[in-house]
Image (cartoon, rainbow, N blue to C red; front, side, top):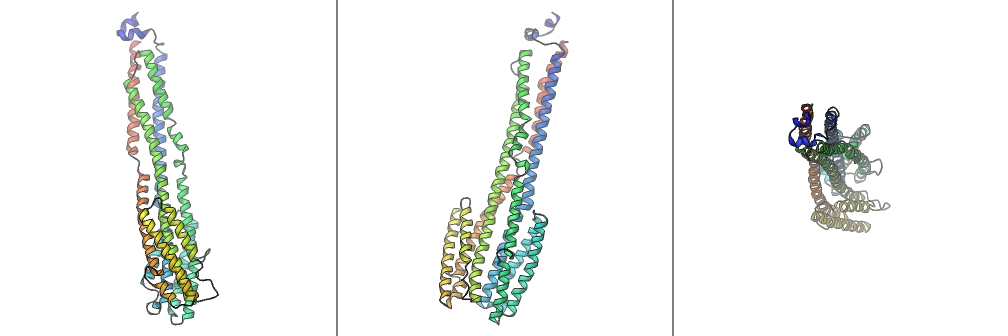
Length: 435
């Protein structure tokens, strides 16, 4: 009777349902401790997963991603340098001024890109060895071009030196460009390895959200416990804590999905950018092949038999990127590629007939000549590189963004823990007062 008189009227009606004064406070304390542990575990797992995911994205963005772009740029500058060198001998300008300013500019840009590739290299010792080998071969290549310049008045000897140089650059498996392309593929594989980080794996989502499920179950169960023993349907503090805990878990889930999706968008943009640089390199190699065929004038050899393969690969690269690229620019590039093919066919026809105009067709800047159509194709591909670079930058920024979860995670975690204390500690004190 003393217990009933000591409680307010609303409490007195439920006093008969109260468990023993020892078991109920202990149960509430255990529930409170379990809730605080769930909140702390969610805070820790979400913090680790978010930090790990951003670390993988940051590492890829700082090393592997720029290394792919660097090596693709190296391939273009070297291919263009080779084109310029061969065309300078074909045109006769090598006798006067050597391979020319554009050749020197291409080599300078290639060396700068190589230095950046060495700085960003994500492949380890293998990549460093390839870069050193490329640097050494470039010294040999430049020496052969210089010999061609020194013997420019002796056509056959100059053509021989330049042929050696071009084959050193263009050889399918052991040439300089082949080594650079293999390194680009290795760097691209390193990007995929970062994408496969355990912090970006789908299973991490379950691990991260695992503490949220028992936490929400405990909050719901505690609400029912309090309703039975305190005759209150809802505890506002625990209700608010439940909403915030569910919101925090959902926020973490959305952040993880956003990071993974943005990383995927970044790799797609990277492939588009790398593909545009590769296409520019292939166009330069195709032009160099036609020019070298005229320089060497060997009727026994097929005329620039690599041109068709280069052109086909350009088409594959451009059309493969057309879904994400600017459609107008892509259509313009495809049109320029067709003119480029037509100009090559005309060069081959003239060369087969020993037409002296073949050299003019290779070097000419008109829209129907190889030089002019090649320049138009390169300009179009250059626009695609700009568009792809913009998309890559936007995707990298999106992948690195935390959507406010950095400061929000500790704030919400502490708030949920505080609401659990606010909702349960007064009930524990109430039982103490009853005793």
